[in-house]
Length: 353
Ligand code: 1CP
Image (cartoon, rainbow, N blue to C red):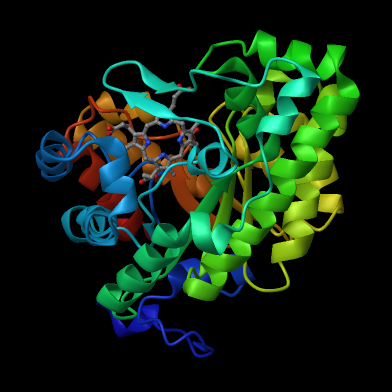
């Protein structure tokens, strides 16, 4: 590891703190890099564990979480680790059954369909219901031995509502949106319960050792700008305001480029962006003080490694190397060759301004 990566005001004690410095807006020699869904099905080492243990055994066993979290650190050489877990541990902790069926994705067999159904869920004691996550963070931090920072995460309230009401993945989440529009009082009650749970959960992750927290609003882009303002933004901002005093928070409202200015004006310090927005326009929207993260289309990792390298260098040049974290615009897909993931990371490391 180059000594240059340790900047003068390294107060975190983390050896490669590029990611933390970029979040703070301090000058870096190159942007840090990690990839959404970097721990997962494109890695043969992950598939070995997937064949042996079912999904929730992997998620609930700290030793397995630690091993899976560190796989891309060792194999791909990213500048930040993200805890292996899932956003759906929150509906589970709130009292709903969540199944993860091979090839079908998540299934909640008994979703929230009516306002009366809210009586079936609670704001849980997260220390008790989700202790395995905090145990996994403690073990992972210890094993990382301050090599790079660890990212904790949760789903944003609107995205969690999507699964709680729809009961499964969807391209449109029309049932979930209809619940908001037909039962606005109950929907707000549900969003507030998810928000309260998420704040407790992320505070516990921070206390256990997470260095940075990311909030995934994977489905917020299904909302119109006015509906984002009504159904997503207030809850995202509550989480941001509760956590940002304690550590950097990255909001990732996928597809909601129209909300970026408003989020920045409301104090969001870091935002993830997908590939549907030009880097220069994203920067114009948020101004000079927000750290941007993104935004290569993961499908572009199926190109040749030479093409990936060119795309990565163009991406960095377009965003600028400061207040910027190189990443994909959404998660890695299982069909991406490991060498191509490594080419993405290496291209960032090779970039020279
Ligand atoms: O057995 C398996 O390998 C199943 C695949 C899988 C994996 C690897 C699922 C099921 N979850 C995960 C891990 C995961 N999920 C991580 C940690 C890994 C990493 O990032 O390196 C994270 C951050 C998530 C977050 C997550 N889960 C999101 C938000 C991010 C995003 O991609 O938008 C969402 C929407 C989910 C739900 C979910 N969990 C799993 C699947 C297949 C899905 C998506 C289902 C759908 O399309 O609705």
